Length: 69
Image (tube, rainbow, N blue to C red; front, side):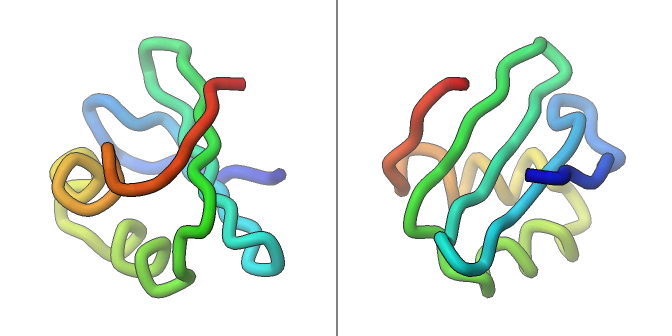
């Protein structure tokens, strides 16, 4: 999955596959995670958020199944 770099203190890049509704997030710490069954609207809102990290913590973390890659 191709990821797009974002300007964030803890998130390095974000990718999304609309067919599988899989969100991929790479953190500056080196972790790479996939989040499953994430609606495209959540991805759109994450990318449009003033703070990607805050949006992630409030709307994605601990709300979707995930795995570390």
